[in-house]
Image 1: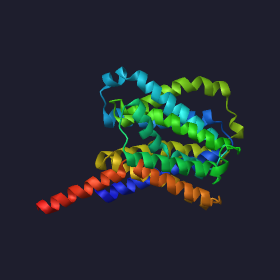
Image 2: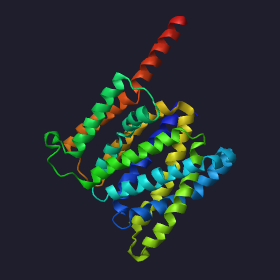
Image 3: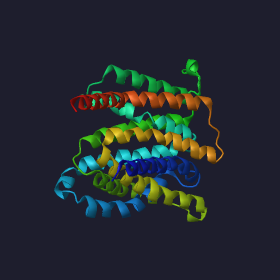
Image 4: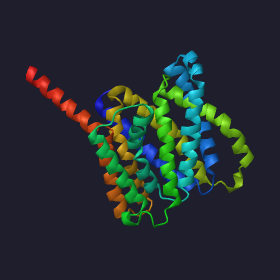
Length: 305
C-alpha cells in the first residue's frame, strides 16, 4: 500500500469520525444516549467480530486471560465515553464537542506521567498548557477573565468528562497485548451484555423514531464504528501511530466544515481555541521531536552517501 493510499484512508477515517458528532446531534433529539450506543455497537459487532476472527486471527487464550481488562475497556470506551458524548451533544454544538475532544492526546500524555511513570519534556509541558488554554477559550466563549464567574454550557463540561474517560480507556488499552480490532470487538461485546438490560428497561418507542435517526445510526455503525476503525488500523500498521496521529487533528476541522454546510455558524473563539488546541497537541504528542529526529537522520544519511 503506497503512501498516497494511506493518506486517503486516514482522511476518510477522520472524516467519518467527524460525522459521528454531527449525526449524533440529530439522533440524540429522538433516541436516548443509551439506545444510540446500544444500537450502534450491536450492529457494529456483526462486522467487527468476523474481521477479528477471520482476519486478525488472535490468540484466544490471551484474549480470555485479558477479559477483565477488556471488560473495563468496554465500560469506559464503549459505554462511558459514548453515553457521555451523546448526552453532551444534547446541549452543545458538534463543533464545540469535537474541538474539546481534540485535547485528548494531551490528557493521555499527562495521565501517562502519573499512571505509567512516563516522562514529560519541557516542550510537552508547554504544549499541554497551550492546548488547555485553547479548550478553556472554547468553553468560556473567549471570556477567560470570567472563568470563575460564568455559567458553563452543560454539554461542554460533559465533553471534558468524556475526554477523561477516554484517557483512562487509552491508557488501559496500552497495557493489553490483544490485536486492536479484536480488542474493540470483544470489549464491545462485553459492554453490550452489560448495557442490554438497561436499554430494554428504558424501552424504545419505534413510532417516534424518524428516518433521520435510522440513517444516523446506520452511518455511525457503517462509517464511524467499522470503516473508520479498519482504515485507521490499516494505516497505523503502515506508517506508525505517531504519524497517523497527526491526522486526528482533522476531526474538528471536518466537523466544523460539515456543520457549516448544514447551517451552523463558526465563532471566532472556536477558531482561536481550536488553533491553540492543535498547536498544543502537536507539541504534547512529541510530533515536533519526532520530526526533528527524522530530519536529523535524513541529513546524516545524505552526508554518509
